[in-house]
Length: 147
Image (tube, rainbow, N blue to C red; front, top):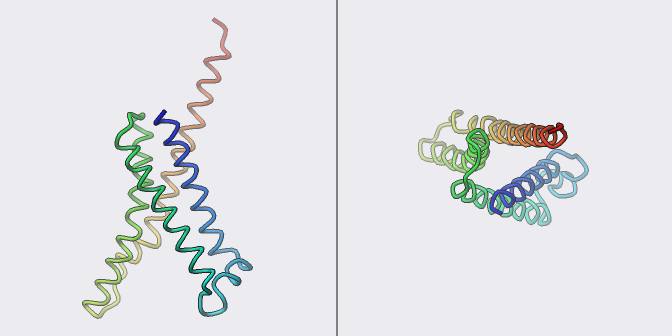
């Protein structure tokens, strides 16, 4: 049962990620939610709600991965996806703290938060999907082979 729950949470996490990225990069949606220069109240509500849902799904997936026995490669990709998810806000906070306290602009935490974490999330998610497709193809081959 937990294995199926992991997949449901994973696909929900991917859907929320796509929706959040779509809201930010699609020009008409971006214009209506975030305005020309200042975000609208609707933009704040959508993005913050999406962030809360994304966080809840990510934490749920992390707990399920830790408690469930899954294949070794799948577990590595799940942990990469979750580590990237957890790392993003941590590195944003560290970037702001270092910039604020030391009164200098640093690029390490900013690069980790804006480039490395999203790429890690995508690599983990694509790896999980590839493993799932390979497993389903192998199962189909097993079922269709003559005995």
